[in-house]
Amino acid sequence: MALFRLEAKIFSREKRGRSVVAAAAYRAGTKLRDEIKEKIFDYARRSKGVVESMILAPAGAPAWAVDSNQLWNAVEAGEKRVDAQLAREFILAVPPELAAEAQFQTAVDWAQKHLVDSGMVAEVSLHHTKTGKNPHVHILCTMRKLDGEKFSSKKATEWNDVGLLVKQRESWAEAVNAALEKAGRDERVDHRSLKDRGIDRAPEPKIGVAATAMKRRGVEADPERFQAVRRVKMLNEVRPMMKAIKGHGEVKQNGVGATWWEKSVVFMTRVRDLARDVIKSTWRKLLDVRRERDETKGPERDR
Image 1: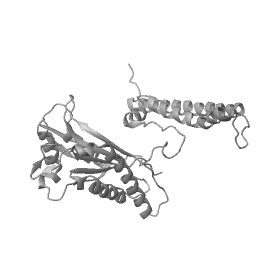
Image 2: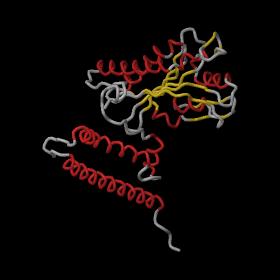
Image 3: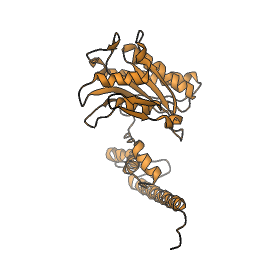
Image 4: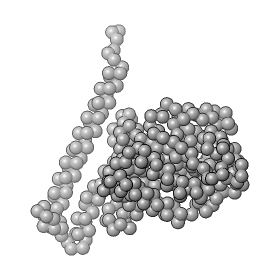
């Protein structure tokens, strides 16, 4: 199902000494050398997850600006502070209903119009997960405009405007919907919040890659992030009932119960069934992890 996502964040060096060269290598699934750290970051082994990557630069940009190694080393060299902001990153969800070529082209066209034409140099990388359920695009952008053969001495502070981010979110939704329409699909996305769309539901928290990885590897059978999502889903289920109780003192449901307490019984039954299913699923996964571990170790030798 097509979902909307445009996440914008700043990639900073911070005191841990993070490298934008390493970040670029990871997102593009390639090998780059950080000239300052004198270290090679090789992520070519994960290239299967990176469908396609491309650098976009403004008209008249020098040749080094479209070379990933030279570009991001120039960014590193141009920032002196230990906590310097090195790049701006956009993470975009692309519809799984579209072919990979259409997903990438939609992101490239949007980045060109809304980022590069304003002066940013942007590296666009399309990622496909193993499950195929979360295709997304990383766009790593420079914080400074080009000034001839080098970066400007001043950062473009107008790119930090919150109003600009609002427009970017809206324009990405329009780009996705146009691509879906062109492909003959009925799905559409909406950049507005649930509140602005008049939907009385709490947003579900993001699970994240860390919690997903822990669950997949068996580090935690039921990570806290997964628990948080289930809690929000449960609250959303009971939300209409509680709103009706507050307003009218009862809840009328089609064939389920005329009063709030009858609905409560039905709801608690559903909660019990959901909890039972979760426990069964978690226990099964735990047994599978133990079985795989035992098979990997093999039979113990005679002592």
